[in-house]
Each structure stands twice: as structure tokens, then as C-alpha cells.
Image (cartoon, rainbow, N blue to C red; front, side, top):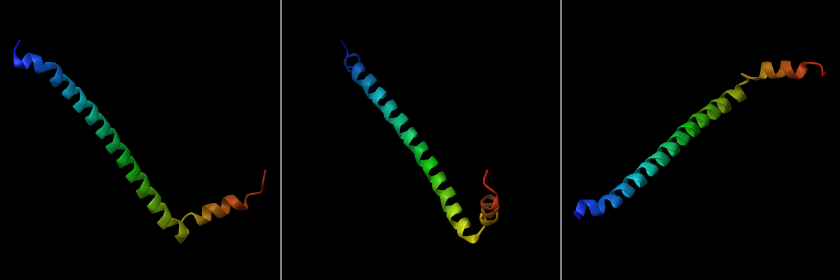
Amino acid sequence: MKRSERLQPVHELANETERGCALRVASVQKRLVDAQRRHMELERYLKEYPHGRFRPSAERVLARPAL
């Protein structure tokens, strides 16, 4: 039996492990991008909120009579 034939199972295992790790990295990178996008949205909201951008609409909602 050739050396390459003996090492074939090791090679396949290494490839499977590498693919699994690559999938996990891709998943974590997607979660990171989503979290960064959400963080930017929240930062923008935080900057806009004190300046009253949402105040007029909030006052209209609060001024409505209760059902």
C-alpha cells in the first residue's frame, strides 16, 4: 500500500475539519456584520432622539384619547 493511500483518511478528515471551521467562521462573520449594522442603527437613533426628531409624532400619539 502506498503512503498516499494510507494517508488518504487523514487527508479527508483534515478537509472535513477545514470545511467545518470555514462554515463556522462565515457564520460568525455574518453575525458580526449584523451586530455592527444594528449598533450603527442604535447609535443613529440615540443621536436623533434628544434633538426632537421623534418628539412631534410621540406627542401626537400621547395626545390621542384612550380607547
